Image 1 (cartoon, one colour):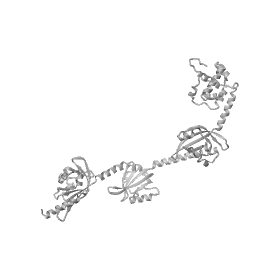
Image 2 (cartoon, rainbow, N blue to C red):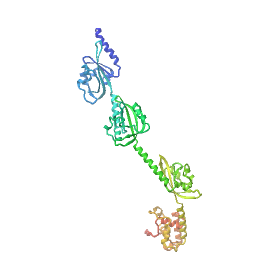
Image 3 (tube, rainbow, N blue to C red):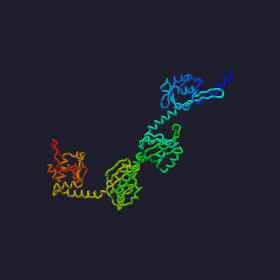
Image 4 (cartoon, rainbow, N blue to C red):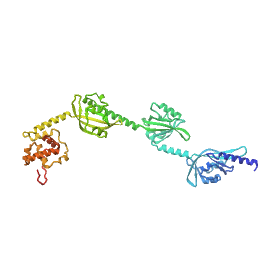
Length: 497
C-alpha cells in the first residue's frame, strides 16, 4: 500500500475512534453506498448486534427496516436516508419512525441528518447521524394524553409570544369557550390572571417564565360572567419551546357554599336574637356560655355580655340530670324539667330543650328554656281543688266530674296500651266508676261488691299506676281515655273479685 493510499484509511480509523463513543448513532458509507461502519449507539438503535445486521447496502437496509414520517406516511424507497447519502445528497433533520420487518413491536423515533464530508487528502466521508428521540416522544405522548384527560382545567401558554397553544377539556367546560376561541389567543386577550392584589406580580412572573405560586383570581366566561378560581403556573418545554403550564381549581362551588353558610349563620343569629324565649349558645363539651339572647338576659336579670364565658349553672340554671354528659355525646333533649334562679332569689320552673349544632365548623350546644312557672302553679292549685271537691261528689253531676278530671290536660290522641294492660278488667271497672264520680259505697253497690273489696281494688290501682290520691287516679285515667262508659269486656268466665 502506498503512502497516498494509506492516508484515507488512517483518517477513517481516526474518525471512527472519535465517534465510537458518541451517544448519537453514526453510520459511515463508502462512496459506492456500501455500509462501511457503525458505532455501538447506531447498532443499539436498530436492535442489531453486528454491522451485517444493517443489511450491508441501502437496498439491504430497506429489506430489514421500515421508515415512516411522524404523520405515519411511509418513506419512499429512494428517500431513505442511506439512499440519499449514496446519491451524495445531504439533508437536515428528518423526523422518522424506525421499525423492523421481523418484529412488529419494534419502534424507535429518530431524528436523522446526512453529511458529505470531503477532506483535503481526497478522503470522502458520507455520514448518517441518528438521534434517538424515543424517550422524548413517549414522554410527550404521555403528557398529551394526561393533559387532555385531566379533569382539572389547564392551559399552555407559549412564552415567546404569550399565546395559548394547548387547552384541555376541563378548561373548556369550566369557561364555556370553544377550543378555537382559546387557541391562538394571547394572554392579554384572554386574561386568566385577573383579580387579586398580586396580579402584577403574577403577570411579571409569566413574562419572565418563572413559577407562579397558587393564587386566587377571576376568569372571564364565554357568556360574559366570571368564575372564582385558584390559578398556578409552572414553566415547561413543549417541543423545545419554553412554555407556561397554567392549572386551575374551580372555586365556584366553595364560594357558593361559603355564601350559603354565611347567610345561614346570619339567619340563625337574627332568629337567636329575636326569639321571645330564653336561649343560650354553649360549648359542646363543658356548656361554657358563648352567647345568650335578650330573653335569657332578661330572665336572669343580667347583661348579655357579662354572661359570656360563664357556665349555665353559674348563671343560675340547675341542669336536668345527665345534661352535660348527654350533650357531650351529641345527644338531643326535649322538654326536660329544670329550674332557673332569678335575681330576686326566686326560682323559675322551666322546660329545657338542648340540641347539638355545628357553627363555624365547631360543635356547639343550643339550649332553649320555656318558663312554665305559672302553668305549674295553676296545675298544683287545680289538683288541690279537684282533691277538695272529690271529698264529697254526691252533689256534682256526672258531666261536671268528667270535666273536672279533664282540666289538668286533655286526653291524648293515642292510649298507652302498656300501662292500661297492667290493670285487670275488674280494676278498670272500678277506675271507670271512680271517673264517673262514684265513691267507694257507690262502686260497691254498682258492682255488688263489699266496701272492703272495693277499697282493696282501689289500693291496688294506686299501686299499679303510681298515684296516692283519688283525684290523681281520675286524671291518670282520663289521660288514657277511661271515662267509665266503655263497653264491658266479655271473657266467658265470671270475673273474680
